Image (cartoon, rainbow, N blue to C red; front, top):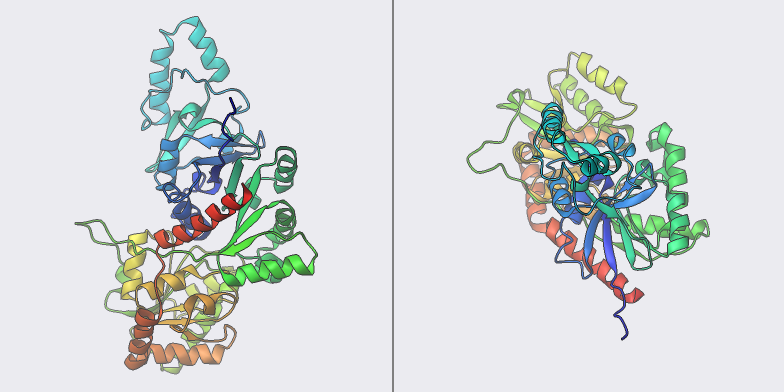
Length: 464
């Protein structure tokens, strides 16, 4: 009797999501939104996995735990996982911790475990010593001890029918050169999501510490990946050009758009809104604060408007995003400048429903970045029908189409004039809002996932 050929299995690497303790932003959001929509869209069976540094292997995550991770309900510090002996077999018959509640603090778990140990037979005590591992799971501000067998079901089988999708912060979590050696030995398929190649094109926009790291990462990735998803046609063209110019192996590249679902506050609740903005009109910029994003351009333009008296007295400037590298001087200037200290508000860690409310109440949204692989906050703003002022660098014109007003990211005079006009010209705002509503077609995360898995299914079918 001839056995049926093995079926391709897709393993979505969610190492970044499983170790992410904050609000989802950028890469984390993409990984979660695409990964959790795999079931029903992918023609092949789908599992979720993470990469374990100590053993240099991928491990399959238990389905229930993966679901919690992708919903943003829990996370694990990777340092806690590094010390675990996952190279040992994971017991199929379970152990003393498997049916313990997962909402106990560490102290509660230790007391509960102690009471169980007193009645355990010797065989189970030996099993506990040899096989049972604990991991701290963070959820709702608490840490609870959980058996590794509740998190991990076993190693990912590495063979020609295994396809692994890598869409997170891979340069921080794995050795891609090591992955290439494993791929050569086992024949598994390595699929990458490429957001941009800014470290190769514009290294001056990257944290100095990361420049060499990311150059090495991409150098290894382009020799390792069998396929690559790109988040825009701009990124796809950048990658194709780089591969050609450096005579690197060609690989299948496909672009697909990211989504932008509108997250509303739960029924019966009110989204949070800063009291400092009550009764004010404000511009909104949602982005990590770093040199590439050109926050200084907005600050200088806004300050000039205030200093010249052209800016309305109730005008405010709102930045939403964490403070990144090489911006200490800018933040210090904002906080100590008597003209604008109380008119520039910096917020971070904002829940999605509160961010939606900030978008809705903003007079207009700005995105003056010097280069983008996509520009997710521009998409979010247009999806809500907001007036948008944007740079056209990188993919921003591709993403924005005809809806935004485009301005050179380094032209301070034009940004100054545009900000003053946007705060004082109601007709201008109405025109730009109409363009967002009528000339931009929102892409939901469901739409994005449909396109993503459509591409993946074609690749799998072609490889049969």
